[in-house]
Length: 130
Image 1 (cartoon, rainbow, N blue to C red):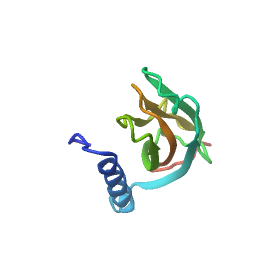
Image 2: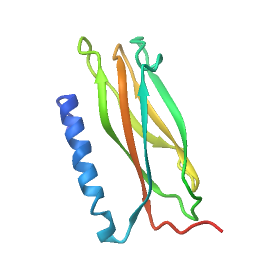
Image 3: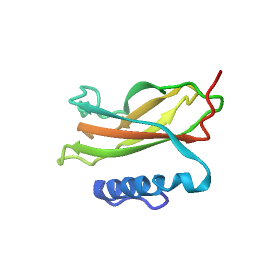
Image 4: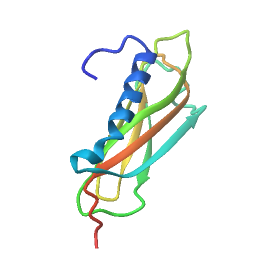
């Protein structure tokens, strides 16, 4: 996102736009190899409202192992935050390997995330490891 979002709705609209663009990935020679969705409800760390950085990490394993590292793109499907505070959050894929990655959801300051769903896509050429 090159422009700073003005609201959570701006972020969700950007994620929907990203999903639309991903649907045409095959036209440039790459394909969506794997995908999945993770949902976190009432995660005590993300909803604590502590005035510090907090992250929730889950290890994602692909259905198959590949010869090359795939590009992973996480998108937000839905988010429920406490309206009494600013909504600060990030999602990212880290430690991407040929067999999976770490999906990281983070927040900071007093933001409270009550519910968040993240959909992820792994794209590339998808040659399987022997």
